[in-house]
Length: 333
Ligand code: ADP
Ligand code: MG
Image (cartoon, rainbow, N blue to C red; front, side, top):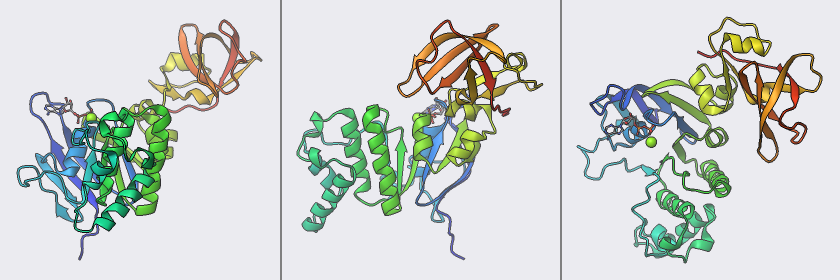
């Protein structure tokens, strides 16, 4: 029977020696084709290691990585490391030719056997990534974010089946980042490209990913759809990665009117209802962090600090006393 799996890791471990907690351990996962999978975790949790194992830049100490049923070759077995059907883009875009034009950097990835096809494909990719206006510029004259676009264009022009992205948007300005994220989503929809990305930016993974893999200290702690993991995280670690949430102990929970014997409960800032009618507990507005369309209020009551979202900026000022009602709370592990 034909093996129908796509990109798969089975009980994969890789340690760098030295400290016990380096690398990744016992990773089993299946990447869904045609979707965007995001690997999230705190710094040092093993995200880059996992991506390099999937690509074949690293060999596992134990376990097996396979693509379409075939084992991925490690760098010891392959002259040019990395699987031919995959491309990887990291923050380090060193392989760009800084003194050549954007167009030539991208076109150079294709063979010159069919010049017409080469030109058509180059134009198509530059259009898909909204960078036709940059095509005649030298790469050296581009911003960090624009260089990242060139690196991504070079990666996708050869039509890989899988695009691996290791925090490639870090250098991209926030305003441009959303555009690039949108363009990549669009390419995934149009071409069926599979993307595996690593990120620690919650806004990015929540808006971009179809599936999330959460890793902590080299191990997968949970996986799922972004909305599902956001609303029902099984682990405190996941909640803290995805949102700037309030983590309260039993006594602190009591100050919010929550009776629980749980060691730690989680209240998202948007689950707090504020009111001037002080029927509930009374909280002092210590600080207001203006965020444009909304603001974050830092509230205090008997030494307990709470972060709440206020969708109607300017309703309160620092020093005000407000009533707080917690609409929802969670008790993840
Ligand atoms: P992340 O990308 O999530 O920040 P990494 O995969 O880069 O994490 O690293 C995971 C762990 O392995 C970290 O503790 C890191 O220090 C260690 N590590 C990564 N690369 C090496 C290496 N080449 N040599 C030794 N330790 C490493
Ligand atoms: Mg990394």
